[in-house]
Image 1 (cartoon, helix red, strand yellow):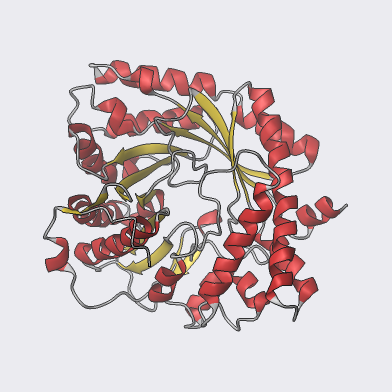
Image 2 (cartoon, helix red, strand yellow):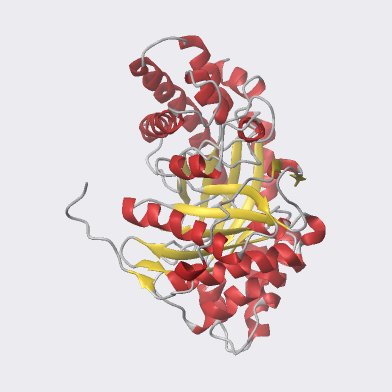
Length: 445
């Protein structure tokens, strides 16, 4: 009965079943032959993914919102060919996704934390066009990690790529940027888009599951109003355990029915624009008048830690990003906080020090310089690299929009007010290029 209540009244759902597929055996010196192998493999492995997800949903009564695919970073596969543009590879991924019925496929990606290979450069230059001519393809680029430092050439280039993507998708509110993530310390088993890819350390194919449930956590906290934080943390832990057990059940069923090994369960709390499914409202339930007020970062830290502690007891294979997402456009409470002036980009950046993943789904003025966007990427990468955690930037310079405007993306992507960015230039800093060295791990302070 408790589970039924969580599903029916508190918006508990399985946010995604994501099938990871290795494409390492699809590389070919002829790009066309490589794309044929990619299409055939994806459609063969994932042909029953959507049906199995729908069957489990019907039999168990647990909503499964998304069925998705992640693949090996395409830069690793396509660079075996002599192609000078990888847009056709993106079209192949898009066609395969449509053929099997998933709503997103991730992996039009490159890993350039220490430098560019030939294929990395071609893929990154292909991103704007690839995201403008496809519907379901998601892209990501890892520009730094704790052991390599930060590739500032890539940081500089990604500012330009984001601006180009915004321009090429200007007729759709620059939505291409909502399908593009710039990471530091990217993980190989993340089931959530837009940053999902199937890492080279993964097996041939795997099932990763992401759970949600901010509404369930908030509802549980409503029963301990005024209690000390020991009680708050314990309440979140117990609730996270129950949420995770539901995810574990679905993950095992999907794995068995598809005859694909179970990979990981991602414990992230993923909000939606719907009322009652907001991470921001959890902070307000803890006692902060509006998300973004002083104390919000501490509240987020407690939430993240307690969710992990409770979830780890419920599943033997936890991975992905596992934390609370704080996307602005996808969280009704976040949107409200921005509109009322309690939440700005500087506070969001501070919050990313203690959560997954980073500056996420933030709409900014379309005339923001690319070097300013690169500066934001560099700041987030620094937080991730120094603190040995994943961070990311998914930011949308909405072409033709400015402060005071609002943008509507629709569906789970939600809507967002255009947020203010610093008017001071980062150009001379970004244009230096090179690489910020990896941090020392002793002398922690």
